[in-house]
Amino acid sequence: MDSVEKRTSSRREEAYNQLKQAIIDKSIAPGDMVNERRLAQTLGISRTPVREALQMLEAERWVTVLPWRGVVVRPVTPEEVDEVFQLRLVLEPVVVEMLVGRISRAELYSLDELLRRQARIASPDQGGQFIAIDQEFHLYLAEKSGNARLLSFMTQLRDIHLRLGVETVGNLNRFEATLKEHRAVVDALKEGNAMAAKQAMLYHIVHTHEAISSRVKKTPQNQGDAL
Image (cartoon, rainbow, N blue to C red; front, top):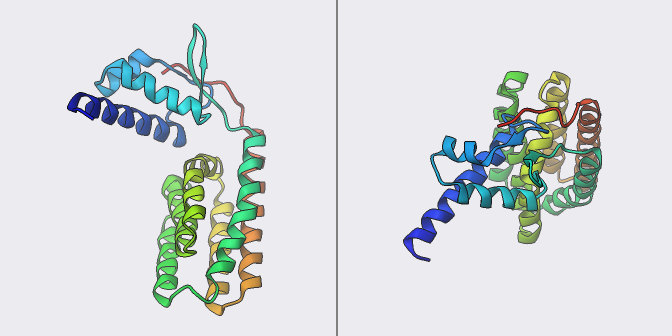
């Protein structure tokens, strides 16, 4: 790859990452139109890497290209929420079951530290950080399972998890419940109780699913502005 190709690739990744983050934190809301030319000017790059970044996001179902109109941010649908949590219900109880008897004291300490960090920011005004640590917690468990394919798959779901998690930012009760549910998982791992660990994770995923589904169904979609 020559220097020109490297610069183009770097700018495409920059545009891709900034757009995705803006969608996750809702700086660009569902239904907003994304103006390719204006975005290129904002980022200080040409339109080509912006166009390529938008094509990548369309392939991942984050945006939709509307012929002769532009690009619109797709809302998260109830069906997509269900699909994501169907996968989590299958994968994550298996993760904690695999960890029982093999997770080290140092790794359990790291989980405790993650929960302490999360507890310190359990407030709606720090919702984005709370959700980021939430994902760090779940990916740490997957990493320590030793199953590289499982970790890779869950990493692919991370961004959509972050986007879904934002739906619960205004719910302080859900923050507190999440901390208790995470603690139950860690306590079961400390006790070496595989059944309790699986049940704690199932409980957590089911209740998170219910909270997010309820919020998504109540949220008006496709009422954004142009960017």
